Length: 117
Length: 114
Image (cartoon, rainbow over all chains, first blue to last red; front, side, top):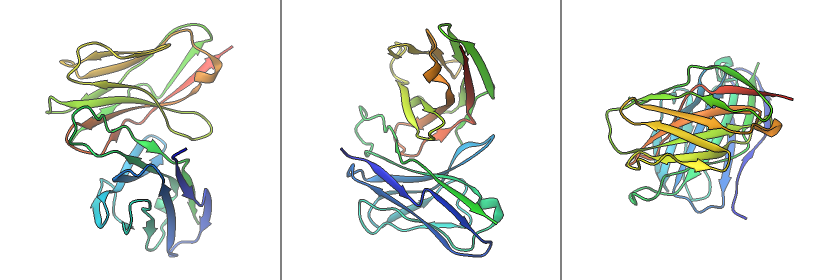
């Protein structure tokens, strides 16, 4: 069965360290997204990609970067982790739009809990 | 920018009864999609129901149904015959039809009492 997996599921790091969260999907979806989930804010979009070599900033992109070298993977990098980046991070993917019948449903990974001390 | 508002941070319902979760959104677009996602304690995000804005008929999925009021920009979720397994965080979400990113509300935590 197709799926989307994230690793690590839990990570504790120190302020100032670089951290990379991995996301791998086997849906063969063009679109991939990174969200962070914080109490009272729901899910907020960090970065997204519509295909290989394409990346775009979301509403809370400061301090984060992504790269898309193949269809399956979209790693999220925190260049210099800050305590404000303590959160649960979700990767998601969806089929492309352009077909009005495609609702663009998101398929989510299980989340990665990151704690920055 | 599109925003999604869930005005009920927490709701509770007695098992077997019905509960309605509220969602409003702000958009200037006429073609879009709306979703309700469920997040149980396992943290996995699960799609509950979806609604295409161009459809007047309200979507239903078994015990889950929506009341979509396009003019009022309202999209509430009704859960009938509530079960203990319905206890979760519920998120309302919006996506403009020609845009791939989805915007979420802050969520409503639903408790089901036995």
